[in-house]
Amino acid sequence: MKLLNSAARGSSAVLAGALLLGSLTACGGSGQAAAKADTSNLTLAIDSDSASFGFDPLRVADAQRQFFEGLYENLMTLQPDGSAGPGLAKEFSYNADNTVLTLTLKEGVTFTDGSTLDAALVKANFDRRTDPALSAYSAVAKGGAQEITSVDVVSPTKVALTFAKAQPGFEKNLTSTMGMIVGKTGVADTASLAATPDGSGPYTLDPSTVKGNKYVLVKNDKSPEASKYAFSKITFSVIQDPQARANALVSGQADVAMLTSPTVDFAKSKGLGVSQIGGTLHTMVSFDKIGKTAPAFASEKVRQAFQYAINRQSLVDALHKGDIPAWNALPKDSAGFTEELNTKFAYDPAKAKSLLAEAGYADGFEFTIVGSAETQTDLQAVQKDLAAVGITMNIKMASSTDEAFAAVATTPLGYASLGWDNPVGLMYGVVLNGFTNVQKATDEQLTAATGEAAAAKDDAARKAALTKLNTRLVESGWMIPLYESLTNQGYNTKKIKQVEFAGTNAYPLLSSYAPAS
Image 1 (cartoon, rainbow, N blue to C red):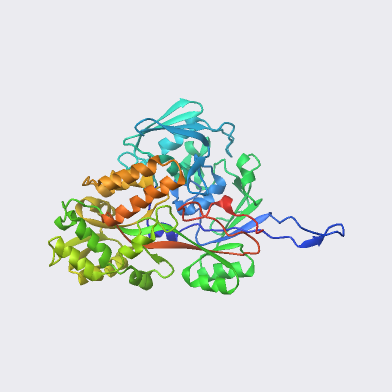
Image 2: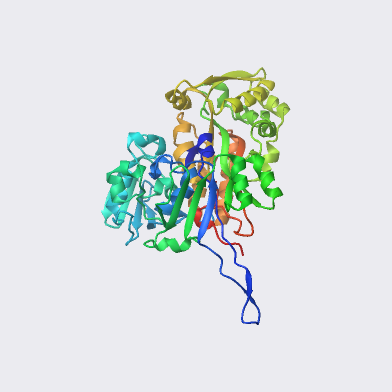
């Protein structure tokens, strides 16, 4: 699970992939055969420095996971269908009440410092995640929504994570940077990670790397996982200017490039492929569902009125061109997405006024929301829509980080960017039991749907449960979605296949790049 902000999205380490195709040549005079594709190098044009904080996976967001995936292995791996599969942990199991997760580790894994994987090393990695200095990058520290109370070595190949509260689905978190494991030297001397990675990944950092300019990764011949990656060398080329990135793609200097909305049409006009993927929902979150901070929010009809009052299309057209308006709480590519919500909660200020009147607020009401420099313009747009139906939303700019975090207990509504790659974990760890519900409101339908999703044994059952969950989040007004961010990737269709994205992950996996057929 992850809570993202727009800065994390904007500072992403980007997308990429490519492969030069050989020409067709005569074969023995009796026909033609395709020459073997050149998989010697793949060049990615990215929009920011992937290693601005060095090579410590705890100091980056999931937006940088594609780069770090080359250097480090995860305890669990993200599968093409979005599920969690074996990684450094070949098996996992929970106890009966989902408060203990036991991982069974692979044997024979070697890190760049020469150390090997064992339970003691995994414990050392998790213990490091509770360092207060890394609290901005960790959700498992004491008092966190996913607090780990202890990490215990069961045997050299088994380690047990014990949680403060039940955490079914936590294994999905181990597919992200949270689950990347650092070698013994890096754990003992974390300062060394500023200059040198210490992983067991499919690639190692080549000396030709120029920090902040280009990062060159070469195949790690000690990694059994390296065979799953098509290219012998991968170059991450940092090009901050959007048009310059697009030009690099057109000229062939890059095989794949991160595109901004204005450069998407330019890339298409040059015959390049463009892939667009979502996954990050920018949504208002009802902190108070019992009316403790603002009595009106205790009414579901009032919270529903917000859904009808906000002109999402207008918001996107004015402030987020290239993204899409969202009436679903889950992303468009997720199993629980349903077009019915787009129609049911379409912009209808008259319906909003009617619901307010039914709830006893025909004359409207007033409340305060805490904003930031990143959310201010969006909130001001929403403020106008709400005013039109009689709701006065005062925007107070946070004077400190502490005030922003405290808003979950002092104000009824907030604004956040949510990544739904792990819906069950996000629901249990944040929405139902975590910091967005400090008033401890309950909703039987949400609890039931989350439980069904956690227990689902096949895709059909999971889709049904997540559709229920998504629908109820919106109908109840626990979530008031505004828009979904799209990641735009341009690629040379003659060199590589269109990259597939795993589940609701907003960025493609490094392993997913393959030659065009």
